[in-house]
Amino acid sequence: AQSVTQLDSHVSVSEGTPVLLRCNYSSSYSPSLFWYVQHPNKGLQLLLKYTSAATLVKGINGFEAEFKKSETSFHLTKPSAHMSDAAEYFCVVTPWGSQGNLIFGKGTKLSVKP
Amino acid sequence: GAVVSQHPSWVICKSGTSVKIECRSLDFQATTMFWYRQFPKQSLMLMATSNEGSKATYEQGVEKDKFLINHASLTLSTLTVTSAHPEDSSFYICSARDGTGTNYGYTFGSGTRLTVV
Image (cartoon, rainbow over all chains, first blue to last red; front, side, top):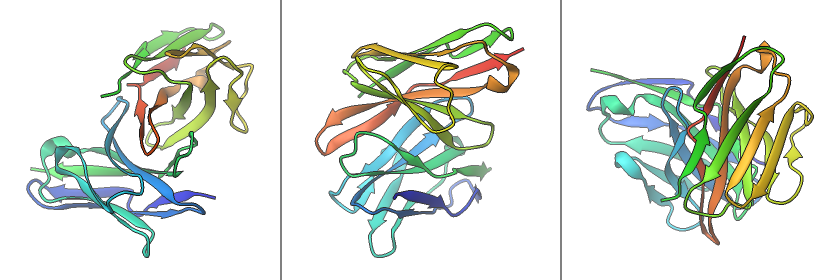
């Protein structure tokens, strides 16, 4: 069975400071992992994905995440927050190669203070 | 990149009426699409998996007669909320798997805000 836990429901940072959004997963099989961002009343936009290639994954808008199998983690980071990064972020897991059945975390709301 | 168009983006309907939401893959073929429901400040809940040319697979607790899904072509899936009631008010999002092999992802529509009055 697969599951994903986002450790923080809300993270608040100041503009220009680093961002860390934490995600731990549980999977019986080699997982594929994704981070999506959702702005209010909008759909989800893919930030980055891990599908068994390089463990350090670079995404859009300066975000990156590192797959750590020993820690079952896939934390999302960004060196310097921008006001436009304020949104809801979802960590998602699915068995590698699966045809569907995405498992969503509960989401982390990122606030960015000026 | 892959684009999924969802329409309408918002709709208000009277209690007892039906509402149809469309989800189209614009630049790729999607044999499988997914329908999610999202309550305020909560994560996405998978409602059903829509398979082209066959019946949808519904998640436990989702009423198939209330939430009718049709996937008649490789680029279009529709969700019809029948006899809508205020408790059906929610944000509905579709997604489709794009790509093949190890280079795949899931592209989401922009969502539909349904308000039943």
